[in-house]
Length: 264
Image 1 (cartoon, rainbow, N blue to C red):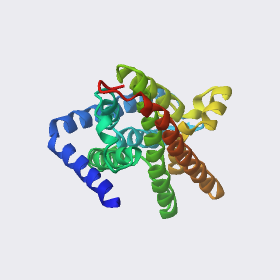
Image 2 (image 1 turned 90 degrees about the horizontal axis):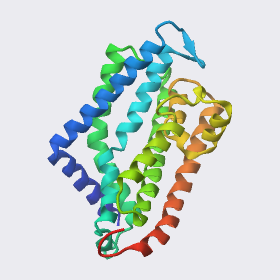
Image 3 (image 1 turned 180 degrees about the vertical axis):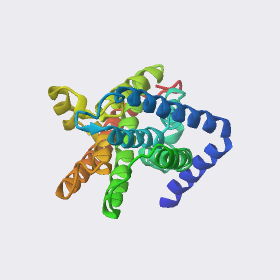
């Protein structure tokens, strides 16, 4: 059974390799975004040493984590999920002896390994070597960050998968995708750290799963979470990962009833 999903992941990776122009465009857009954010925040910190407890060195590291999060699950992966629903090809998926949700996760993993992996390695090297971005202070911190970041990708997949299922009730996936991106980027801390939020919004964001996408791994990377707090952060991330997985299955049971030969 596992071989089927490994095959899907492999085929997804091969598709990414085949569409090199798409990969170059996506990577260029990601690099442009991180550069724009880098120079914007550098200008903000021009006459300041600290903002909401973040120094300029802290903010550079935070931008790196935010960039890695946005790169690991590309727009292509999200649009591919929604397009299966909108063009009706999801009906054929129901005839295959595979789990729809697990199949989408396998495909996303395959795309992530190539698109996200290459972009992340290149930009990370450039930022650490030439921009002086700080790194975790110990091997244990590195391991904790890698674990946290891996779970954050799964959380983001859960959010994207559930939002894509709403295409069963729409005639276009763009509105759903843009709404999902706006909510995720704000409440995860991808646009600005949650520490900059007013108290009521910060408390709300910490209560939701989105903070596990950027804020949680960033707090470990920066050393803001140490000792028992690291394990607490990881446990909260795992909790939301599991909740989103089963929530996705729950939504699927209702959404699949909307399948028609013309799509969602």
